[in-house]
Image 1 (cartoon, rainbow, N blue to C red):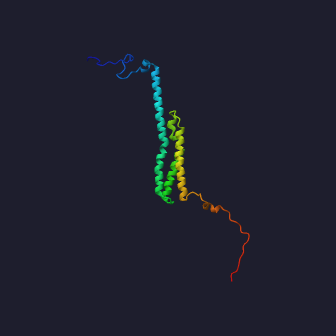
Image 2: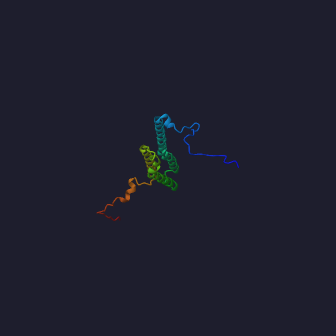
Image 3: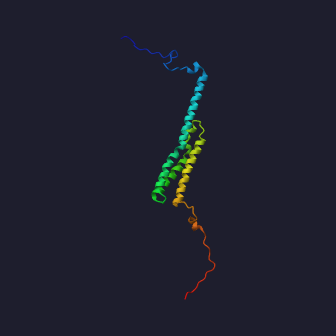
Length: 168
């Protein structure tokens, strides 16, 4: 018929103009100082976003503690099955959270952001929760904190003398 209607040649790509609104040679045209300044601004903005996300992760256990404390309060102070289950739930989740400290902040460590303060806050919140749960256990009578709990460990005194009498 008439031959090829379309013909594409990709050998000479450098002579194509940049698309509208996009300049491929921005760093070369305006100098490297502008591109390095923009890179620094972008990296500082990224670091501040990562740091705010790290603070959100550090304060996350505090959000769940409120619900746990409310559940413990609703369970009462008597050692019933539900209050013991709720206390066990709170203690296990707090301990798991403490052991998962590095896993919770692993994504922030790869972004080259110092998260030691956030880790410290995370640990303090979890320790405060564990302290409250221990306090609640003690007031329920589940932890041996009074002297009456250790009465079996007091040695008996051996009686050296005894007397008997007859009542007539």
